[in-house]
Amino acid sequence: MLKKLFIRVWFGPLPEWMPQYYNNTADLKRYGFDWLVVNDYEFFRERIQQTLGIEIAPYDAIAGTRKAGDFDPAYGVIFAEELQGYDFWGHTGLDCAYGRLDRFVGDKFLADCDIFGNDPGAICGPFSLYRNSDKVNNLFRRVPDWELLLSDAEMYGFDEIHFNRIVQQASAAGEIRFKTAFHQSHDTEPEHFPVPRMRLEEDGTLLDLAKNKETMMFHFHRYRKWPIL
Image (cartoon, rainbow, N blue to C red; front, top):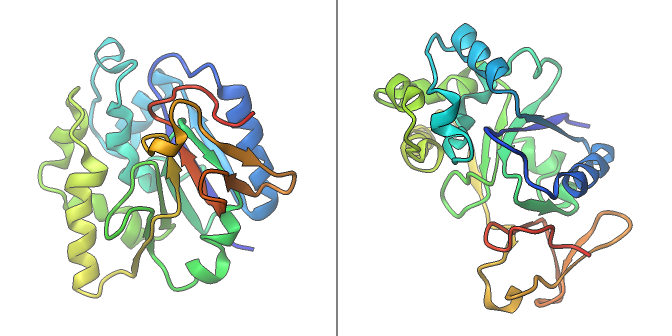
């Protein structure tokens, strides 16, 4: 079984639904998916200095913002130590609930894939996977002025905008194998307002009751509460 590690860095207080989130993600270990949530600013600041050689913005300038997402494409380098022994790494959100990931991005699907983005034709901030290789891990360095974009306090959408262009260029040149899809439900859909209609089965299957079908994940960035009762 391929080993996959999802990483989420977060600056500031964690959301109140973290106990449910940890339970949900821990259940996916049996299907080859592990999680690492990093909420220690000083640890991350020192790690960035060691691995990327840059200084990030002060805590007060970025705590509670989405700035952490700008670092997503560089996790392969930043967390190289933690990624030893893993075949893939990924970035996702804390405002996501997950189903049977193995049915959507399982070993067979990933066998001929270097990067997967859960957005048609693009990198997806809330869910993307990367092969743990030097070529893929260092692809973010091709973004012009990447050091300035990451060290600044402003959130630039580094993953879905700047890095996405590099991935598409590398894919078009045949340098990497880039796969995309849209395996998710989300709370901006009218059928999930004002209360999401989702159910998590005992085996980890996530059902979208509004659509009467299984889904890989539910993104609840508007609802801001754990969406599964």
